[in-house]
Image 1 (spheres, helix red, strand yellow):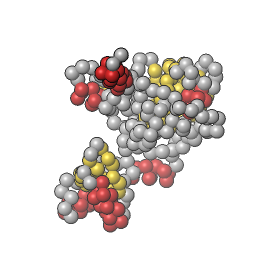
Image 2 (image 1 turned 45 degrees about the horizontal axis):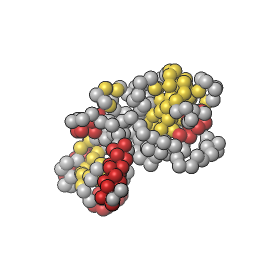
Image 3 (image 1 turned 90 degrees about the vertical axis):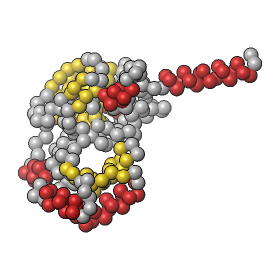
Image 4 (image 1 turned 60 degrees about the vertical axis):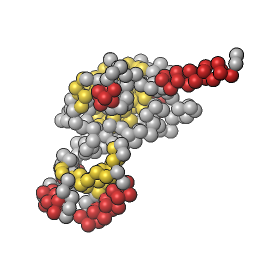
Length: 273
C-alpha cells in the first residue's frame, strides 16, 4: 500500500471517530436540536465510567436538610419537543420504574441548577422534582438503598424515572447492567421559622445589571458593587458573554435598589425573577 492510500485511510478513520463522538441529531434541525436538547446535553448518552474504577465505599449518602429551591433549574422546560412541568409544591412523591446512571461524559459540567456535576458524590437527575430535593432510592432487585440529592434534569429516555450519579449507582450495584428497577421516595424536610424567613427573602429578587464580553470588567464591577450596595454580586458566563448579577435582595429594598442602579448608569438593569 502506497503512502497516499495510507494517508486516506488514516483520514477516514479520524473522521469516523469524530462523528462517532458527537450526539445524534436530526438532519436539517441544528438550531432546534441545540435548543431542545441543551446543545446535546440531553441527547442519547455515549457515556462511560471513569478510566480507573475507584472504591466508592467511603462515600456517604446525602444528608437531607432544608434548602431553598435554587434560582436556576426550577422553571418548566422543553426537551426534544416535549414540555416538562416542575413540581414546585410537591409534598409527597413515590414512584417505581427504571433507574439509569451518568458518569464521565458529564463530570465537571454544570447541572441544571448551576452546580458542577461530580460523579463521585451522591446526586441524581429527575424530570419534575424541584431542585434541590432529597430522595431515597431502593434497588428492588437486591434491596440496596441510597439517599441522593437531586440537582439536575433527566433522564429523557422511555421508562426511566431517575438518573443517578456514578457513586450512587455503584452503591446500588447497578453499574455493570446500566439500569435497575427502583423505588424512589421523596424526603421532605420542613424548615424552621428562621429558615422560612430567609427563604422568603432569598428567592424572589435578583437583578441583572449588564452583559459584557470582558470577564475582568464584570468581575471588577461585581466586587465594587457588592461592597457599595451590601448585597452579593456574581458573574455568570453564557457562551462568550459575562453577565453581572446582584442578589438576593430583600423584598423591601428591591425597587429602590433597581431605581438607584438605573440612575447610576446601569440603564439595562432588570429583575431576573
